[in-house]
Image (cartoon, rainbow, N blue to C red; front, side, top):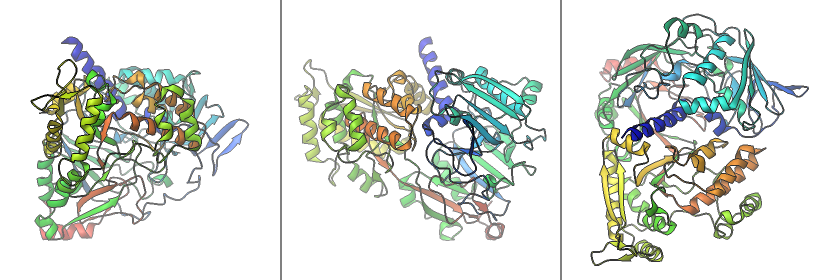
Amino acid sequence: MQNRHQNRAVARTKQDTRAKTAMWMSGTAILVGMSLLAGKAFADGHVTVSHAYNEYGDIKYPADFAHLDYVNPDAPLGGEISVSSSGTFDSMNPFATLEGTPGALASAVWERLMTTTSDEVGTYYCLVCETLEYPDDNSYVIFNLRKDVTFSDGKPMTAADVIFTHELMRTQSTPSFQQGITALVESYEALDDYTVKFTFAEDAPARGRIGQMANALVMQKAWFEETGARLDQSSLEVSPGTSEYMTGSIDPGRQIIYERNPDYWGKDLPINVGRGNFDSIRIEYFADTSAAFEAFKAGEFTFRRENSSINWATSYDFPAIENEWVTRKELEDGTLPAATGFVFNLRDPKFADRRVRQAIGLVYNFTWTNDNLQYGLFQQRESFWENDRLKAAGLPEGRELEILESLGDKIDPEILTTEAVVPHTSGDRPLDRGNLRAALALMEEAGYTTGDDGLLVDADGNTLDVEFLETRQSFDRIINPYIENLKRLGVNVTYNRVDPAQYQARTQDNDFEMIFGYWVNGLQEGTGFSQKYGCEDKEDVFNPAGYCSEAIDALGEQIAAAEDYDEMAALVRAADRIMRHEYFIVPVWYLGKNWVAYFDMFEHPENLPEFGLGHLDYWWFNDEKYQALKTAGALR
């Protein structure tokens, strides 16, 4: 029992490190190559100095840009936007991953050395730094800090705060984060009060180093020294940050309010013009999504991102809609959808045969499910990178084919001569009989026969027992028809819906057979690719299938070392082709849109960017509309 708890702790450490502290990994997952910078960048010998950084291609915005293309530079300041969150929270420290549950947006009060935009992939712009310097071999990076950055308590931010925060991360963050950042950075120092230098370990991956440090947060050294607070301890006390928002009021488990700092040092920076427009951001907590939806209809919070197709199709007919108090929109979403589906736990020997996995997948009917249960709102997912940039399509050719051929006997030779695997098609009945026959044929090839009771048995007479593990009641209507189809195939299947705590514990311990899971990928991949799909991390919660492939390990090393975007993209397409062929997840659906509903007092730019909704960033508040809603009784 003790080992089980230890395993859970290690899994939580890995999960929260990557999900909540993207300081070193998100740079890896986004940045992988190297190019000289455009705009105001210039070379002094072998050292590049610039306001921005991108390892691939040109930088969009020059040093003297006025504002981002997609913002309204004249957006008014004021008002409040309120959103919901499910569950509870008892801490405002997002780094104490083994103690407590942190509140939503808890890290928003601290800024990073550099920041990204929503209309580019992989470009970092100086935020608390003014410029950065780095040599051609990326052996170090120097950040020249702005001299006017202040914390929310008015104290200036200096290089001492940057170095102190880095030391905190090396010593008090989660173990896997400590290991990663220590392996990356060999030495660090403050060259003066406004200059910091990070020298990278010689054996650290050359690509992605600078992007990782660009993501580093900055906290206030004095506050930690005065309070004795630690990163690894749960707390509702929050250290001052330099962000445009600071923590206002906290009601544990119920509500958090973040307030705009009226003295925010960076409000006139070009990167910030037209952003951070609300006076406050309020987060209301609810036990479940149903309670949250009822609260939204009653006006208890004002902006909702919908993720339920049945709600979107059937439930937006409440009085606030009919009175035109609430606006309902579908906005385009160009972000890469997660690679979602029914995940096989490959650690279980029953799923070792690819034909068994294919047979189980064949009786999932996307067409019927989408048309009858999801109102025809979704598209069928094919690729792990469902985007034209990185998605494998058709027959392999050109550089992608060369890469696949170089893998030799590490891959099935069929991959070289066939089109990229796409999900099967199904008819308009719950069970497609043609697919059922094909699935039975695959099971026979894998050594199974059908007994008198209709159950599949192997050569030793063992039935194929499969448990589906789930925690969301709302998924019953999606999973139950699939369960019935599996029973018709002859699988001895059970559907076990457990409470969230049990589900978290079991999935973190890899104690499951099939779940509805996902991988989060990027439009630029780096060493983070291997952390999601590599053999070394096959026990990690971020590789839920426990997938391990010599070919993918080889491609992971090449992706991390790719010199340009085209090479990285060819490598990722090759990987996509291999992983789709090996079929360790039954692909389901994706949306490609943002479903939003909000009380009609918020406005947004007409030219919303490709990679961001931005409702908490560059939307704004119309006070005249708000007053009209108040007068009409629309809001509490």
